[in-house]
Image: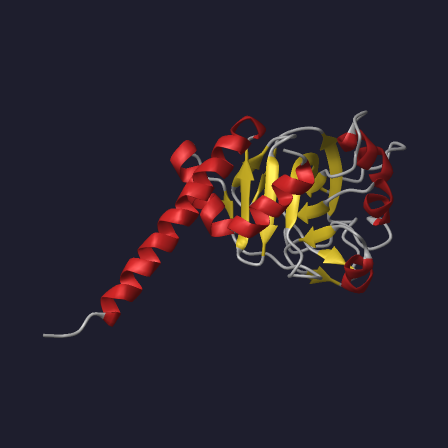
Length: 214
């Protein structure tokens, strides 16, 4: 399936069903608790491109490597369209990891979205971009003196979940799930089965209430 078809399928199934399906395939933690978004009605889906953040250190910061360096490094040489930029917290989930100006690159590159395990600034700007944004909440203060990007294209941690480059991310207002790329088709197929099972169970329960009492 093409990614736009996969995205529509994931959105139709929803986060809870996808998490249940992941639980039937893998035993590791894969669910992300509910996060904040400038547009919570816009789900997020796509393969991850990762940037790892660490606590700021003056002697290690800079060296000619700003966010631009890590952004394009995370995307690599493949087509960026449809990717999800994942930013780890670096130990400080309550500070800003970016904002509308810095993340305008994601809009220009055609990314599917941004998932930050920290806060982001400028919800008004982010809401107007074509990509979906999910994070820990809105910030008003710059956070560059607290956290700094350190590496790209590495496994990162988001809300207690390991995210490896290429993993598929799904987020909606209920929460999120991280699906290994090799398991995606199987997880989606199982999620479809779960959706049918739940619909049949709900129908059966409703019919119990319609039975005459004797």
